[in-house]
Image (cartoon, rainbow, N blue to C red; front, side, top):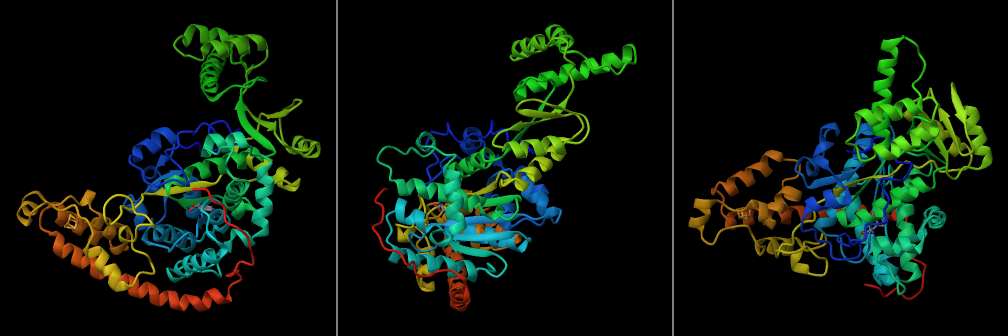
Length: 525
Ligand code: TRP
Ligand code: SF4
């Protein structure tokens, strides 16, 4: 389950160690087994947060958005009319296609739900990591922005920017870079001695993108992306935590414990405080050594018992009392002093931490953030993310920008879009007769995906009908593809009209459409 409180202790979420490069942001983005993402990388199932999302988008309802990190925090803000943000970025390496449309739609939906929404062009990344020239980048950047606006992004309400032109992002990247080192880049991204410095710089730039919506004010922020971007999300969460002035943990005595040990301690505490009040009615808290005795008789199975008992014995007669602890991480002396001053009620001050006996954890989180911001810190919340499934290519296999027949570009001529759908692979049977008998395999059909991800739009009943008719053997592929192809033609026609209208909007915006840059692109990957 998601830890609802903030992992400012940075323990559970370390990006390092994810050295299995099944998730490679610059590799081929296919995912053979989505279950593995849950087990190996700790992505959570979207289904679990879905009930908390007000009026969810069809991509959420249909399981296209399948995973998340701490999206519950964003959903809660949305439901309570509190500030939240959404941000995603696009590498201008080619034409925007129907796979990118998923992310465009996710951003637009969050904007409609009231979020501060950002769309960015990852031109620094395209130049350094993909070797694209500035000239090409300009052309593609423009096309991404036009499609995003044409699909409904409101650039007056939200913000569109290019990494290369956003000095705040670049400054933040520099700052974040002081908490990131090469060994981590090796572990997370497989970087080596031949990786260019600019490529590394594009990584800290993306970290800055992800935290940019919180510069003015920390707020829950969702990053909608494909699962290949998860290493970036994990790293950004780590860096956000590392920049915090104070870490918050919960403890029972002066010593530190890990979450498992804390569980055990809490059991001892509960049992002893219950016994205590039953016996003599006194309010005396139990002593550490009493807890050690209790654990030794009552919790022989636990693998962490020995370590907890050791710590408890060393603490001896110290009373056992639950508390919220503020750990000094990066705080200036002044900030630490101010925090001590600001903790109300019963507290104990140590060299590098303060224990509060009266504050709840959320109250402590809020206070720590306030003090941090007042003293020149960012106070970042850990960014959240949602992950969508990759679309299958129309020719089977992966949908790739470099294989034109595998995808439909948002700039494809509507007739060409029609033809591509007509030529697509299906989940149909060898003969019409077999299809009537056995039904089609909609779950393995790129054409069905087109309906579910795009063509059926918000109409769940239509998407379900296509599915049921297919697997029930009432729908044959010829007619099914004809219908899909026509819908695709309609979609492209309409989208391209809207793109023309978007031209004017784009011209009026404050986005630099021509990079005043020279140089030689990087040559990795
Ligand atoms: N790396 C992303 C890609 O390959 C682009 C990107 C840059 C991005 N900054 C971002 C995505 C911030 C999400 C959030 O497409
Ligand atoms: Fe795919 Fe349609 Fe054929 Fe079913 S009937 S397999 S959905 S093309």
